[in-house]
Structure formats: C-alpha cells, structure tokens
Image (cartoon, rainbow, N blue to C red; front, side, top):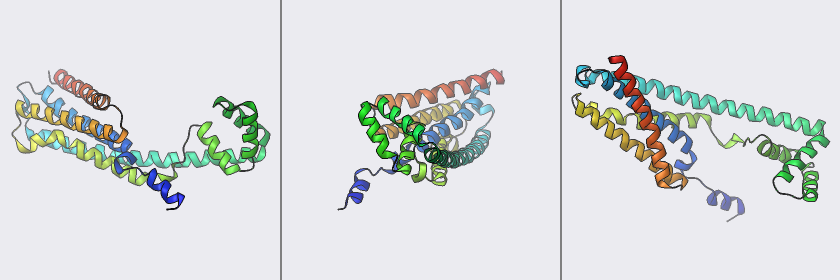
Length: 241
C-alpha cells in the first residue's frame, strides 16, 4: 500500500463525523423549531390543545418544518460558497504580499513560529526555507495568521442537503403523535417525550462521532432544546391569555 492510500485509510472519516456540524445544527434546530410550534399551540390553548385541533398543529408544523428546512439548507450552501470565496480571495492576497513584500512576510512568519514554540534560530531558518515555496507559505499563513483552513474538500451543495435532510428527519419527530392520535393534552405530552428522545438520540450521535463524554454531549443537546421549548410554551400561554 502506498503512503497516499495509507493516509486516506488512516484518516478517513465516517459520514457522521464528516457531516457532524450539519447533522447536529440541522437536527437540533429542526427538533426545537417544530416542537416550538407544538408547544406554542399547547400554551395558547386555554382548554388544552384539543381546542385548537391537531389539524392546525400539523398544518403549521409541517409548513414551518419544510420552510425552515429549505432556508437552513440554502443558508448552509450560501455560507459554504462564501467561505470558499473568502478563503481564495484572502489566499491570493497573501501570495501577492509574499511576492511584493517578502521581507515583511518572512518576519511575520518568524514571529508566528516563535509564538508556537520554535527557537529564534529555528524560526528564522524555517521561515527562510519556506520563502522558497510561496504556495506552502501562503497555506501556512492562512492557517496560523488568519485561522482559516482550506475548504476545498467541502462541497457546499452536499453540506446544504445534509443540513436540510437532518432538519426534516429530526424535526418531524415532535409531530408524529399528532399524525397518529387526536389532539389532546396526552398527545402534547407524547410529543414532548418524542422530542426529548430525539434530542437524546442527537446527543448520542454527537458523542459517537466525537468520542467526548456522553453525559456532556447529551446534556448540552437536551438543555438547549428544553430552554427553547419552555420559552415557546410560555410565549404561547401569555399570548393566548
């Protein structure tokens, strides 16, 4: 096996890890957004959710789910495209500065390398060597000076679709009880439980991808969703009188 094949195999990411940000971002927002609709209706119903009816919950819930999912997906797509454009514009400017003002750029790189632990002599030697390779130096400066990583391997369209799909899949969970049962207080409670289970599942998915502590991953995900749900219920209760 050649070294390139070994590198691809050793550093290959699973799909969950590769799209973790999009899955967590879209999934969490989908659960919270859809449950906010359910909680808002429940809070506004003076005699319980049956007063408003399950049809209204489903109509508003589905409409909001799809509209927000499209918005989130397109937002992720546009954000990714903007990041690509910004990176390449900034990198081109950095290459121009290396070509027109090499002494200043070498001094900047020396300082960055010293801040990262190299001795004065090693930093000077390394900076002088890298000046012979402008592309490599530009990549290094983009990472160390501007904190920007090359987004070439990311596909904005795919990221946008994953965000959309995650939003729809996880965001549908709070509505499931209303597809099956009549709209009653019990249905709302089942929606609450389903939303909690979806948040826990999302937290476990995050834990499985990152390897961080399970309690932290799950609790952070659940707390964020719970806060938003409580706010939505409270607003519905206040507005609904």
